[in-house]
Image (tube, rainbow over all chains, first blue to last red; front, side):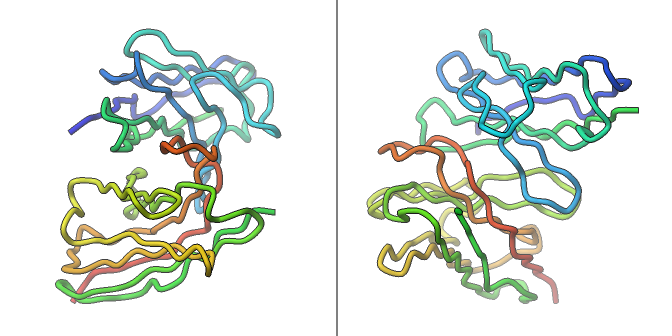
Length: 108
Length: 122
């Protein structure tokens, strides 16, 4: 079955840039989406279609995709950005959805 | 305001059955693909199943095929997940999610419910 691979954890100091990667064989042809999930809460969409930012999401969140890797970048990470981040995409058929394993972002 | 409210969670024995419901409001329910996503305790998110606007297409993650059935009632603005032959590994919070676009293919999850916990244990 199709898999998306993320690093388990990323740690930065406040104000630094955090980059979270997501690799998958179908990413050259399928969009990547990014979700933020804080403890005990439902996930929130922070990036869609590789690089688009939903309304209400701070400008410090950006996304990019090249080849088999998508990247979520948080420029000037803040303490409130501490959360689990998941990439999401679909397999080559488009019928199966798949999440990456998640990355715990620590900002301290 | 888009609202998705799940119900039907609880404790069930291995091999048992449960039916989850999701009641939607604040948007035209029949215009969107709908999905179920789950999260086992302390684990990551897992897409479970989705269903097309008119119910004509349904897709499932391999681990639930043949055991779970997704359905919808557009007249009642409701999404369902019938879960049979439940296993301990099905223990999770189950989220109802609405697609981000009114397209004829599934895209992404723009809106989520708060989830309902299913515990499979004897």
